[in-house]
Image (cartoon, rainbow, N blue to C red; front, top):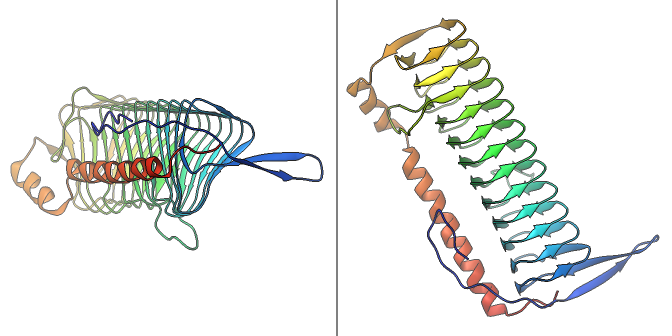
Amino acid sequence: MKRKILALTASAGIVMASSIALASPAEAALVTRCIGEGGAVTVPGDLVVPANQVCTLDGTTVQGNVRVQAGADLVLDGVTIEGNVVANANSYVEAVDSTVAGQVNLRGAFGSYLEGTSVAGNVATRPTAEVETAGFVLTADSSVGGNLVSQAGEVLLETSEVAGNVNSAGSYYTDLYESWVDGNLSVTGNELGGIACAVSIGGTTTYDGNADLVQLGSDGPTTSCEGSSFFGDDVTLSGNTGGVYVDNAIVSGDLALSGNDPVAQVGAGNRVRGDVTGEYEDWAGDADAQLRTLAKAEQPQSRKDALQSKIADRGADAEAEAAEAGPARL
């Protein structure tokens, strides 16, 4: 499989099949187990990847839900899933050029990488009683028809679209690059703050109580990207303790800044159609301020590189294990 962001190449597999029928009082429900490599077949009913096993699918259609059990890996290329995807503790889901008609629900999972993929419903990552820290969600050239919800872990959206809201509470960080959110954006209590660079947000934007750098707009002390950022409603930045920078941003509503320590820095490249209220200073790219922030914060590019390295390693290992397991009997 070719991962565009990671520039990795791995061999595609062929699939055959193995299924078991589970009887219910009303009717027999077909559940198919996948271990190994699968190809362009249609799987009726649900599909499950057993715990600590690996399944790679290429061109497959699944006419039900998919469950990825604890420690298992599911790698999809050109796959259609007509139901939901649920990934359990320390499991991994990778989907390239694929379609999910339902939701993607990560329950203490290692993470999920979506590239060129459409999810009609929500994408959610949450910890569980057994796994206190959830993994990551990375989307590239992908679309989410519902909301993206994170309660832990890493969130990185790149050239992607979310039709609903993005709500990241208590995550490690939340970074958006060249992405669109039709609803509201809320980033609260993130350990490493968050970046919103060359984005378009249709609703309100809130950054509250983040412990590290918050940057809104295309220019800042740690990263820059081409084009302005657009915020379609009020923007509220409050109680952040790692530095706040707003520049090259178009804000259709009010820009409210309060309780940030150090005080928020507002650049000259902004256009705010409402009122600018609260405590802030004019920012012109002061080198000393940049150096202080850089010394403290983990750089967005370095954390992005680290996340991509995780994806490369887990995905390559999964494909190698699937090839060793041979054709799945679907």
